[in-house]
Length: 314
Image (tube, rainbow, N blue to C red; front, side, top):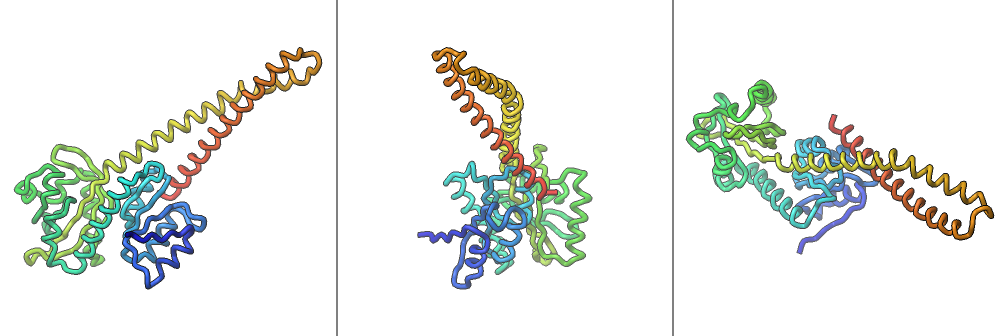
């Protein structure tokens, strides 16, 4: 049976993660803790989480924030409002698989072929000097649409749009100059049919048949980012509706409540039966006023979340 340790704030989580007697398979991090929030919280947790995979659970729907979190090393980025047990289970399996990949790769580069060919994620090996593909797995062939023979006649630049190639060359040269063993980030790739996709790249230096090479794992984030973008659009529609409610509906409602107040001040001049009708109208008007206020409150909360997430991705 899995054992779950629950921390309601960062201080408690820090104590658990620093406990040498505890070993964690995953960390599920809520981005809104009482003593930590957003990108700063992610950095603090990653600093003490060693190699434990980190999965972010958040209400924020900014796709740029999600992309940035993943590029920082977060294993996955899940929206709390749309989270189901199935989504969480798939994320845990995905994270465990990628964590196992990294661990095995670190322990022994010589065992890479077994990992390489059995991985359900696209992987390839390319020559550091010529950028030529040296090997690709079945997942890459299936996902990108090229045959293995086609891949082996190509360079890694064939998967990029032309305007991105200079930046890729700069990144690769910088890694060589700084003697970096790993390269990772978010990039745009082209499939054979011209489809543009967003991928997370993890690359590690290896020796391939006595040639300096890079072993690359590519994870397609396109559907996930499109999903987050769709949620953003829904939130914008909600804000537009809320604005209409608060500005257009509120004005005639305020006038109606004002008229009810004037009628109540007329006292004995108003027949008892009319007073009863006024009371009913007053109750309904106040209920509608409360509904409009709640819509405005929710719209302001959504706007505040958007403002916060945007401030963290500049």
